[in-house]
Image (cartoon, rainbow, N blue to C red; front, side, top):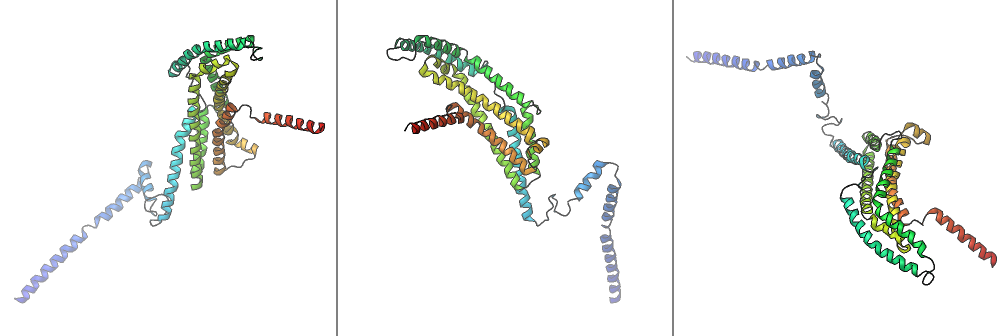
Length: 365
């Protein structure tokens, strides 16, 4: 009886072992199926879009799924690449809209002398100026009657032309301002059309140059790119300030130009002419500097002529100096507007006169 039980147990154990072996053997087909699938994918080279994804997916197998060339545990390298990429994207994202806006705005001035809010401001100033003109006429009469009594400088025949010039200039100031804006815009377009096309095209050339230098360099060049972006924003700020100044000058033109009526107030009228000329000269000067840099400094033949070496660092330095000069042009114009007598030629002439006077005194002594 015991033997029968042992035989039965042995048969049951054999059945269980056989079933388990069969159950463990059944999952074997998936590797064969995967191999056949891989073979099918590899054999199908007729469609490039189908074979491209497996190649791109199987390429970065040694860097943990990235394309930076760093290992899984190269934390420092990944952090360094992340910082470099952040600076690069920041510089490019700042330069793209800034240079596009610069090409569309900085090298031109809107002619807002037509119908609009600025013309309404001019009409208000025109009415006030014509009312004040009566006071200037009265002041000119008093000044003329005091000739050879209280003063011997201004006679009535010299004051009457001043009154006529003041009246005509104040009433035609809107036309003068619009004509000056059109002349400045024409000069800027003439400079930009010489081998560049438009001022916006010149800004596009600078953008391509800076992006190429940033992409091929390290963190230092990307920081220089950010500095250039700051300079571009500064140039845009000068444009906004110049535009606001032009609005004030056009809106208050009759009040300034009516001051031609009397010698004592003529300084305000001359200040208006100098300020209008200075604002428009800034636009023309910046356009000329930009086009000159694009045609000479950013051109291979021009660099050979000047003997300037190439390279990403030199490209960024040239672009930085370009925008620094454009940023300094308004300050030069401001000096000419508010300090018209403090120029180099005047200083040389004064020194020459003073030197001769001192020499004459020494010779006399």
